[in-house]
Length: 213
Image (tube, rainbow, N blue to C red; front, side):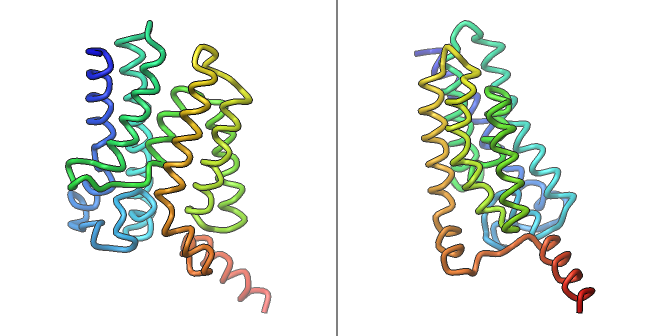
């Protein structure tokens, strides 16, 4: 129980670092939770502040997920099941950060870091789906949902963590369901045709249409 508690606390604390809140606040004097979707996630940083702060936020959110897994593996390499505790705790930390009144992002970037560290082939497959859907729809939300749906299938197919294969596949399905649930408002907007699209894609499309006229 002590190992589980230590793993959960360390992973939660790492996951709870609110990069999407801190970077805009420290460097741009902006409270990201008062702008755009009011979500403390990398996508809202992109829409509000642009490419560089988005890239920095995304990189740090991915890194904290990877760090949580690597620390657990280093401390307790004889207890692979603790990787699932790590993954759950890091995701909960990101989406319910006590630093910002138990609010946070939707778990995609931190989940990406966690799964890259544990199951890289499955994660790369899900990322390929993400970019394919992003190219087709220009919607980060739709891309994230599609990648989340793909992930447990890929985990079951590749079975990279053989000792954890069944349990990890179940966990990845639950994680995917959690990410999709966090996108429930986006799903409503997608169905209504009002979901926002990435500006750079929209602008590129507009310029192309103007050139064709």
